[in-house]
Amino acid sequence: MKKLVALVLAVVTCALTSVLFACGPQGTVSIKYADAQTIMELLINDQLEYGLLPEPVATKLEKVKGKDYTWHRMSVQELYDSNTKSYPQAVLMVKEDVLEAYPQLVREIENKFSENLTWVEQNPQTAVNAVKGKYASTSLAPATVITKTVIDNCKISWQSAVDSKASVNKYISDILSIDIGLGIKPAKEVTDEFFYNGSTAQGQTINNKTFTFYAPDGAPALAIAKFISDNQNFISGATFNYNVVVADDIVKYMDDTMGLADFIILPVNAGTLKYNNQKAQYKMVSVITHGNLYIMSKTESTLADLDGKKIGVIGEGKVPDLTFKSVLKKSNMSFNKVA
Image 1 (cartoon, one colour):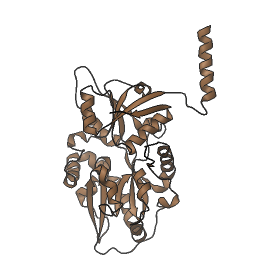
Image 2 (tube, rainbow, N blue to C red; image 1 turned 180 degrees about the vertical axis):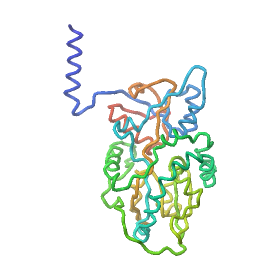
Image 3 (cartoon, helix red, strand yellow; image 1 turned 90 degrees about the vertical axis):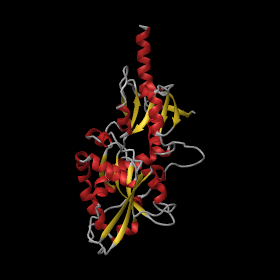
Image 4 (cartoon, rainbow, N blue to C red; image 1 turned 90 degrees about the horizontal axis):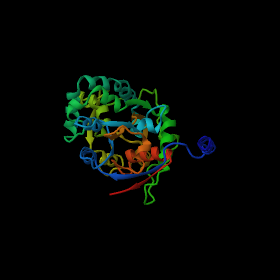
């Protein structure tokens, strides 16, 4: 009888407090920051129980076979939003003056974008070679990793700024609630001016004009691999110069530290911080990737199992870290940084 009463009280307590605090996983998670390769090695050697990795690195890890274990994964996308199983991760930003003068370019890019994934699935070696030609150390190699499952796990698709406005604003609100220290904000709240509304205007004639297109290594680079391979210029008179760079440097091509890209794919939070700088103004045209992060371990786990454990996390203060912390916060789990 006492056990029954205790159970009823627990249920009632959870119901009464659910408005303010979600009933679910609680506890503390220790975070060790490292690059993806280091986290893989620590997981393999049992120096970490959990690691946060992106595709296709997560699949590379799964190819490391052990006699007494198999790899398991939790989708951060599903943990963040169980309905859409996604979040706005990387976005395409375009210079405002380019959009005003040549709106037809964006329409052509959108029209051809859907061809990329089928082509990559059918031509993985060519796709990886195209990216490798722009960035020799690409994480997409070897091409044998780029299967349909991996491509699906990268969650690449074009979602216009108009259609993604609500999800982008929600995501920015979520990560702004995360304290990354030193009084630094990981993003900036945006108004409607951040989002490109599209245009049906014909645009100016393009006469021998070169446009630069930058993307970070990984899923964003995979998203434009066919464009790179085909030397796609979209419209007669235009020439596109494609560049793939290490993810940590991508923002430098939007704030004039290393140039000012005409077209650039970068994390959505970085886009909010840099879209209206002193050198150039940009607008968000579309979401390109919708989350490709997975919590890897040798045991089948739930989020609650991370309580009291240490997890290797990539990208301190960036989208992987911020998204993971947002998931923890929604589950009433605290976190601390460890060596």
